[in-house]
Image 1 (tube, rainbow, N blue to C red):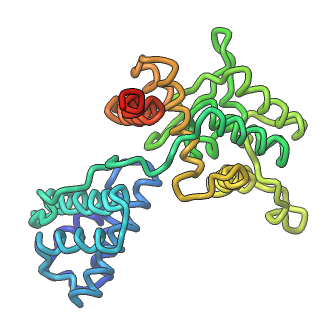
Image 2: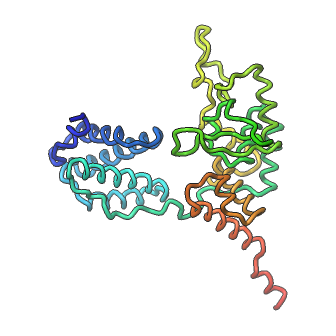
Image 3: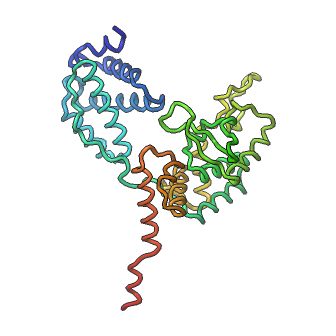
Length: 325
């Protein structure tokens, strides 16, 4: 019997110490075949739950469905967004479902309603004018690298993590088009891709020329810091790779510079901008879904609603009343 089976064979009511729950959490995470980032999220959110249980009840034994409901109410009471609450409760539901299957422990999270992931837009898209202002600002005040990054985000709809993971060799020529292979969200390889228009790829080429000779397996975008070069040691590839935090900061600084200084505007706003801009140009939702690599067209449909809302405001029917009386 492997370690995870031995752990889950123990009655959950006997697990009254944090160490036991930590062991269960570790076994659950190890058994889950998904992306490493998802496993880390499960581990973090589960340990946060058991920490809350210890603070409220003083013990994590004999938990019931009411405890899950109380935790749900607690998450709402501290003002967390529905998307964040969704991630916490999803972790719990998957954990107790797994525990039930492995050890026959009652699934106390079953039936607890998880908030919808997309109840509202948390990030606003940019208008065409704002997008041009952002590109001009980045181009005039920053490096070729920063302009290439923001320009790529605005012309591809990539996520920051996808830009971070990109290597030089992921850009290839196929059938007369320039393609960037993408390591997408929740994926384990680079099978997804986006088409790079001439305006998207030229700034990247200009930036790469400043780096001299580059190998295919090098990160597409690297940090400019020499902090990691200690005692003359050459930086490893992962040390040189620009982080998602740095990419987000580059975008946020540019947004602030053009007057979009609120939590509603961030690097992810650029992805929303792409989705909305494309839907303004075409009614082919499937095509836009392909560009954004949404698994479900229901997600793409949310951008349709955003576009409809923008059109509703721009072409306000109520204004016609001023011509009547």
